[in-house]
Figure 1: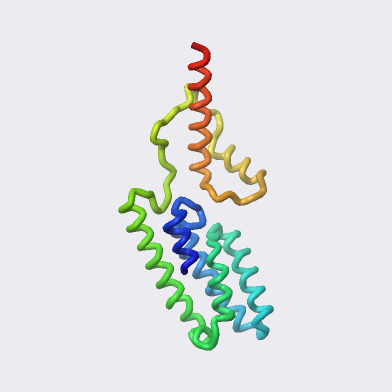
Figure 2 (figure 1 turned 60 degrees about the vertical axis):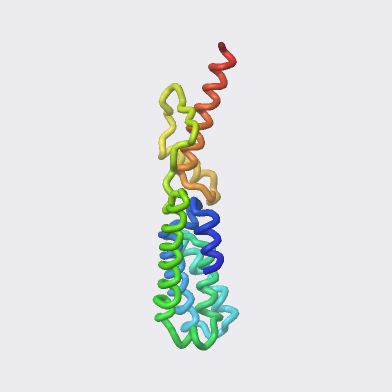
Length: 178
């Protein structure tokens, strides 16, 4: 939960720190870890399988939360108390801690003026482009898919940054032309 706290309070705009990834990623990873620990007797093999399967499922379900790998690992290597808890480990401590941490991040970030859950916002000194952009959200999605790597930025944020860059470039061109 410490690593989750770093993301939720230190990088609250990160797609990895949003409520869906923390809640779903942690619960999914706990479920995978408990299940794998019950099925695979070797702790070393079970740990590797649990983290690998949890990571893959988080990617497929779009709820990647890196600290969730430790949740899967804890379910496997957490010792007798964790093993005795079985699937109750999902409720306490995983769901309870994840929900409380998300609630604390929601309160703290919004009280300090940070949008959480994150929403793309307008720049403080906007430079809108002179002509409407012909680049669509689908264009950004296609480029991000072609890019082939996950970026730690939301598509809407990337689009706002792009529009701001185009607006500033157009403003600079107008200033040099006059």
